[in-house]
Length: 640
Figure 1 (tube, rainbow, N blue to C red):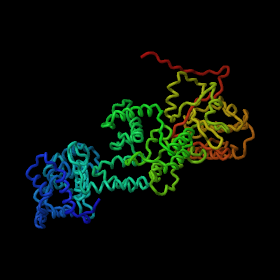
Figure 2 (figure 1 turned 90 degrees about the vertical axis):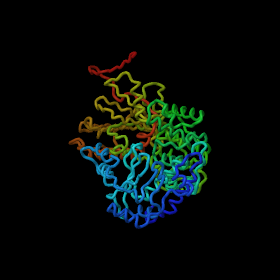
Figure 3 (figure 1 turned 120 degrees about the vertical axis):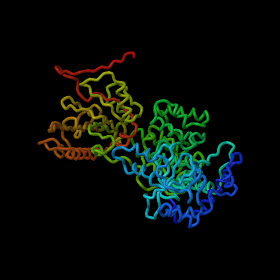
Figure 4 (figure 1 turned 135 degrees about the vertical axis):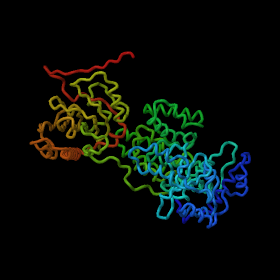
């Protein structure tokens, strides 16, 4: 915003007038006044003398705000302010509004019993304000004598019925006129077929700044680039939106159009995937709404978009890129597939300086955000880190912050009530010396059991339930996500608040053993749906080494438990953990001890936000014994 004391009205108004005159076409009929303005290259009127301004102030009983006074001293009124105000008041036309438009009464009707200050303001401005619109397209403009800043400036409010939005506020008259100048530019920035191109000193200056902003963005200076692009967007410059939207998408914003870049065949392979993925995430199954974003696209681009939509919805889309960066993308996808999202991100970021844009309006790789394994890597911090990394052959220093790390060390994040996923009851198996894809053979009943395709936890659970027709009260098969848990360790994790029955529980530790160790943890200290419990069992070579279970306020143990894992360090036997704080403290201490003992961790980002392979384990409870009863529920679906 330009402060009125720093704003020079004469050059600003003369430049605006010249731009308007040059944009006028001979095939449009003009009234006498507009034709004279066109010939004179002046949209204003003769300057108001100090006497005329003083007479206005005496008539209204108020001294006019500085920026409006300064404007009148250059031009006593104005034609074509923006696109919808044909005539703006000078000293002769300014008057009290006194709700002449009926807007105060209209806004008053919508007030509830406890209106906000803003709602009351929207009523009052139309009674106390000074009306500046003389001729307009249903657009109202008032100066508010009660909304005054420390410089004596009055706020300007505008409202148009066809905009269907609350009144817009400008801090002073100069800011309002600058916005109207930008509106004038926006309405002419894209001339229709047959109209002359809208080119002048302002557009040339802004377009040059867009070019500079592009280089800044590629060099990692995205904040200054964004500022320059935002200014150019205000004037409707054609390239600004497409470039700016790429920055904003990496900062986490969606529902962006990328202007016409996404349907440009040069850029569609990079810009269409995130646009289509955002559409698939927020829209219905119907693909017809996608046509709005594709208007003007070639048949090939439309076909590509619909193919991408099917791939995104089915989880089969795979992002590819050329050269060394593309090779890094493939390595990153493999790391993310097994839960190492931090490593995946570092792989991509390290290779980013080798990435090359597809054309002069391409700022960063974006297609990977639609990839089911790579897309979940994005966080706000990582988006900033990517934007801050020089690429496309531009010089600069990469960021030094630790934005590539999203996962905490160890296991104790599971005890944090604020951690994503809100895991108050969970179980997991850690197997040493076994790859994740070998876990079904050790933990599942079916011979030849294999992993499902990577899914997030919600998708995996929904698919698992859809496929089940029978539920047994004795059966406790776990749907587990798998990945790597450290050097030579793999994990199988179930965070779906399973119910623990100590009397029937059978640890899968011994059956999952290879040459290394197997660790089983089942934690329900904060479950809230029953008595607190905790189980740990460790096995090697098919035999259990040691175990303990805390339940019903007691600890049952077997085997020689290492001192650092001795339950006496964590539980008091007189009573169960009292209260949430005690449960959190106990849980955290246990998880830290297990992580330290075995040198393991669970990847928080992959488990809570990413996509992992899943499979169903064998039951964690023993079969029923003689005399024990249980229920089995079966669902049958017939024709509808």
